[in-house]
Length: 186
Image 1: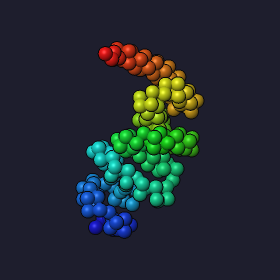
Image 2: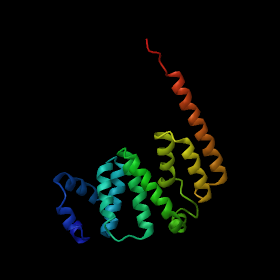
Image 3: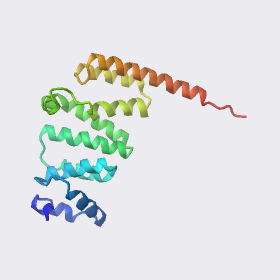
Image 4: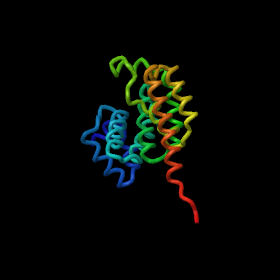
């Protein structure tokens, strides 16, 4: 079996029957060139399928391997998605912070993979704002995050202005929603 060939035989044996079935489902399309490649590609497919808990389990296994900074960044980015799907917002937010701290050391590789620019889908940036403003209603914190992202060159000056305006509108909309949905008790 492919799993044994890449050194995951013991790991596979420790899985529940249900998780073994899930693993086999992803095996046919996964990259089986190494244990890391398999776990990461299967987790990516699992997130795409909305199977976030299984993806998180696979990604936790990735972290047990020796990873380069770029691999660690990529695994964390995918785990942020899995945690968002599981509504584990505090955990996702912590991972966003970890990746922002790691970003300066991997930025050149991340940009290189994206034609020389910062990717549009960058979970440590986008999901951090989603959680802070959209879930926690922490608009002042979100404004601060945007300033930090600008300093880190994760967004351009133009994006900064657009995102600030968008957050202001979002905050006003939430305020109006609260006013107009208020019902008096009799």
